Image 1 (cartoon, rainbow, N blue to C red):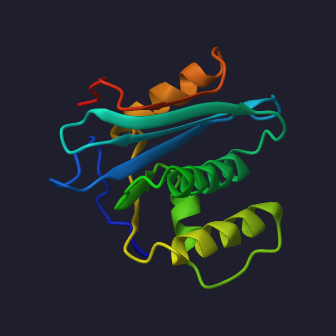
Image 2: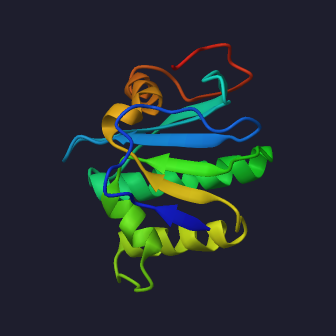
Length: 162
């Protein structure tokens, strides 16, 4: 795994290179309210949503924990579906920094980050990248819909996100 936290993170969505895939994730958490929504999309180099998933999870109202749980769910989803993914993008700088860190935080967030690090160790060529929310609109749109729809997983979706 390698991570990029450029001093100038992406501000608009950019497609992956040809024959490469990236997964954009996002979470919708309103502090103190339950449930929260998770969204993930795997677009191809043309910006078409090849696969995606959205779901709601009852429970916490902590945005950082929601981001970590969504990242872990996306890794498990990619593993389960055997989907190819070269880059994971998140708009949570806190999460990306925690994934890069060699320290362990004794908290629920830290435990989930450790799970994510273990899953990433099984995918050594996968990069993780921080992007601004403006560059993560496809995942953001999916997660906003998650609150008003039942859980949904799809493949080969003809939607365009460019």
